[in-house]
Length: 229
Image (cartoon, rainbow, N blue to C red; front, top):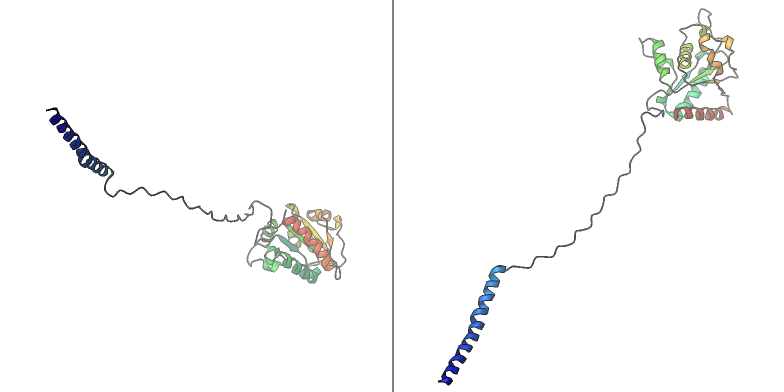
């Protein structure tokens, strides 16, 4: 009887082992596979981002301060006052050097550019008031030039040269006398009261060759100091 009982227990033990191997383990594997999902692949590794190359910075172009006294393009910064009967030839030569250095738009020389029909006094006053420096060319006949009636031109309030100088002197615009043909500065008594401040303005002789270009270089250097502030 006891041998039969031991045999039965052995059979039960073997059956339990076989049940665990062939039933329990496959069931566990199935459940695990079901939870993970069919054909689930491991997540790909994140690739490191590519390095970002910065675009080269554009060079900043300096902007000129519009409130600066530096010359304004297209304006008549240099006003040339002269008498044709006195110094037209040398005035033309001086003008040529000036426009070669500063440009034609920067220099106002000839009253022939005054528009027809306008008040020439108001026009000259406006042009002179906007200039940076006025050059007055004084030759041997500048002071004594007379009109058709024999009156000294400087004594006539309508004289172009007088209008130009009065406009500059009353505004304290720099006035540079250019003494040509060996002329000297006029005396205070020889000038109308409105022009007498002219004698205190420091001038420069503009001599003929071989000194012409040397004198003009000195003048241009002085003008640049005014224009560039």
